[in-house]
Length: 146
Image (tube, rainbow, N blue to C red; front, side, top):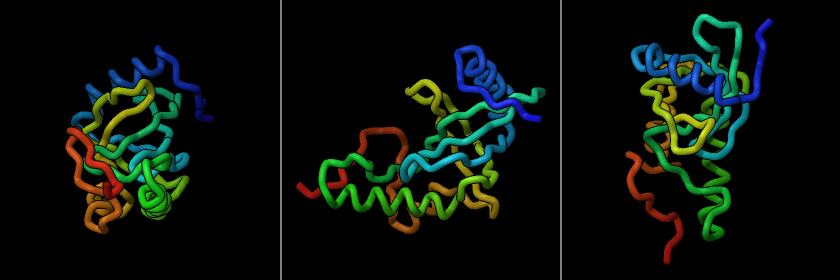
């Protein structure tokens, strides 16, 4: 039986060591737990050489989608659709692959390229469908016409 644990500093440290020693060179599988918004989901990742599974939030590295708590009604409507579409691409319970994993500015969250079971980069799919914009970590552009 796999033990699932809330993230604590020790577990997070072990996860980061695994990511930066193993995960940087290989795809790391994760099981989708729930969709947070159009470019973030929560998933469970198995620690290398362990029977411990940790929950971690994953932000798609290469896409920015509108915010659920947006600045205008248009952004909020687009954000709800982006969240729905991400859930269609990576349904809860499915296994995805995380690549190019980096620590995020928020504790307990990582940035990664996310690949679905068909091998598609999910962020690129969202961009190609105009659900999100290509994003490289710079200043975000607003979603409301001012």
